[in-house]
Length: 251
Image (tube, rainbow, N blue to C red; front, top):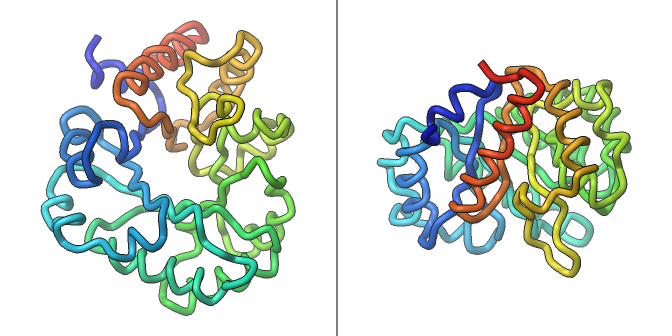
């Protein structure tokens, strides 16, 4: 099977990140458009992304036939500069409005009060809080944010690799997964590395946990294979397909 055939057999929208080949975001998106329908725009570094010009984000990206969502920066300084963090997020959202992202993935502050402030500012700016997805991190359990999320309709972005890395298997339960609009699938980071692992790195036990997660996932949940190398991404897609096929989840 080719890549599109594998994807078409799976019940979930499959997303690839905008960093799988050498080159910038635009080059990656043009490449991805040949293979997938959904792309995750990786805006990991705030300063660099704020400096993007039309050469980095050409208007033609809107014509590639891709749907987009935006992964907001990892280096937002919520603790010492919450105002700057808020301003950065709003500026990046405005910069990508021409691509009509359907969701915005946020690594949240540890303090729920700061998340509350973020949602209030986001809403005041005329943006929909239901488009925000709070990602679980290895550093803390996202349950502390659930009251704010529930109040404002903010959903969860469940990162499978982060959950395993932190020993937060309770996040893989149905009552938590029901909050997720998006699931990131990857292996836990190799020891001493911040790089996500491809699915070939999963242990047999971790593969079983992933299979259990797949069986619970709604077909309208976006599944992001968050692997940052094209050969490894394709191999991970095949492994994902094989796991789903064994459980008769493929069409």
